[in-house]
Image (cartoon, rainbow, N blue to C red; front, side, top):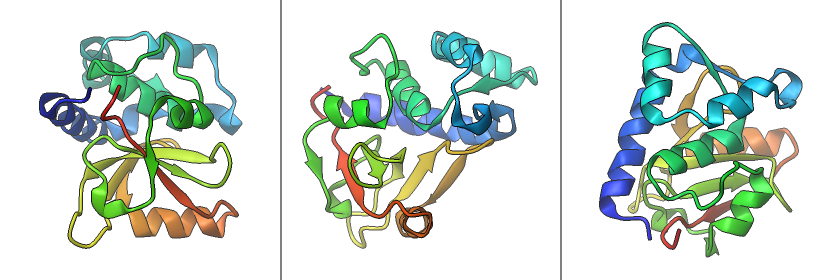
Length: 167
């Protein structure tokens, strides 16, 4: 079960990833590389030391989400999977953004999804939380409405939240 301490950890790690966003690479043409597997095995300390020293790490969106949860001690698998894995592992699913807490996964697109990020700053009043994610070189923190519009414009409408509460 995701504790408040684990959610705080996710929030702090998200801020660090944003700080070192220039060192976050994305797999060329969205095809995972050997570096992805190596980097998923890094501990948080190892990755932050590497980034602080000017090095790089490489993940796609679902690897980043799984790695952040792994660092917080709640990712249940030994591998990252893909957005469909996030939908399988993180349950229940819901659509009301006002309910989303820090760390909740946000899957964009129908079926097994096209992109995943996670809630960095909830918005229980307006339902437009800040979403963290890595869908290109760098690292983004953007509002849900901006990301949902962008994804829909690319042909991937729909937003599904996936709970980390029971991991």
